[in-house]
Amino acid sequence: MAELKIELNGLKLKNPVLTASGTFGYGREFSDFINLADLGGFIVKGTTLKPREGNPYPRMAETPSGMLNAVGLQNKGVDYFINHIYPEIKDLETNVLVNVSGATIGDYIATAEKINELDKIPGIELNISCPNVKEGGMAFGTRCSSVAEVVKAVRHVYKKHLMVKLSPNVTDIQEIALTAESEGADSVSLINTLMGMAIDIRKRSPILSTTTGGLSGACVKPIALRMVWQVAKVVKIPIIGLGGIMNASDAIEFLLAGASAIQIGTANFIDPTVTIKVINGINEYLDQNGFKSIKDIIGLV
Ligand SMILES: Cc1cc2nc3c(=O)[nH]c(=O)nc-3n(C[C@H](O)[C@H](O)[C@H](O)COP(=O)(O)O)c2cc1C
Image (tube, rainbow, N blue to C red; front, side, top):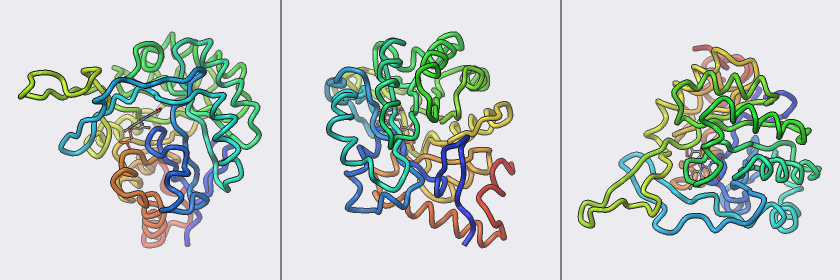
């Protein structure tokens, strides 16, 4: 058995497999299928300062090898999370990270400050990359100046692991990643969804209520992998790779491209046990190829 433990700038994972925000609920939804303690960690739904209804329906559309969503950060707000969800998940023997989103810098700061008080949450993932909300979200993640502003502000109040989630809807992913790093991010995760669209030709109107939505699943993997590889060439902080990972072989590609850990999103909807299969598959690959530790393959390509 190879060593799967990995440390991301102080954040200790028992293995490099996490789940992606918005695709794994609050973990509890999957506890009938897998032992949550077997995961390196999971990232809870996008959490905002105030409750959000999300976007009107329809907000999902299938594509040939992925899905479009426009959920729009539906959640009950950070206080609900603290009072009702946190007590139920805080003693799980895995890392539970909170995905923090906001419409203004003030929202991000206030939400991060509240999460900072929760002893059993070792880090946040700062979502500056959601394409499905009118204000905030991706607007922060696509220009270096606003990336700098929001990361700096949150870094000031948030004392634990600060993972910054990057948008692929940019021209130069390297400069965005470098900006997050220089303003104090402990790691970067990439990618969030790609902006896409689908049309109902009978109704001659967009399928999603918001017209555009975020594309995820197998179809985005080559783009995500290319971006992880590009970012790995320029940053020193750890990278958490995601986008279209459906099996162990996909996950290994991201590790070889320079990710120190990975997240699994849309694949959880297809197979709720996929995370465990990926952990086992990485282990087998390391053993079969004579690697003693996961660290030996990170960035080999
Ligand atoms: C239904 C759905 C909801 C999502 N909600 C969030 C969210 O709240 N916050 C966030 O940062 N990313 C969210 N994402 C993006 C995923 O975390 C992930 O970045 C993206 O889907 C790419 O990975 P995948 O191809 O493995 O799904 C969501 C994705 C889906 C499909």
